[in-house]
Image (cartoon, rainbow, N blue to C red; front, side, top):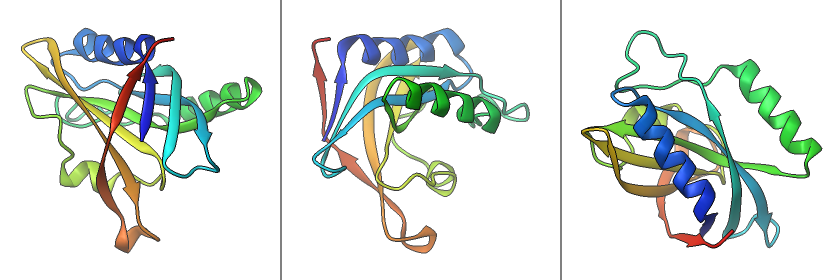
Length: 148
């Protein structure tokens, strides 16, 4: 299960609206519970720039240098990277084959928000599972919006 504060949830959805008609992207930060089993609590999001120049309307890429900086800052605050988020402008909040191919953080959550005509609508979460690249898959993940 993924728990996310209302503030973090609103921030990632707003990010999708701000970048429409391009995809937004960012990192989910917080804490794993129960030794990484079945529960993550997102307390903050880190907005990233979409560096995908060839097709930012339907693809995203986070600069590795930006991700390393976010990881360092999170570690300094005692936070974990719990996953990633991005938007699907004028498309459903479901993962695509490209989303799966480009996902590599096993046990992490991948949130996708559908942004229809500039307005965030549905947000769904998927956990990347499997024992390696050849067996990876996304599994629907229950999401709970919590008070700050």
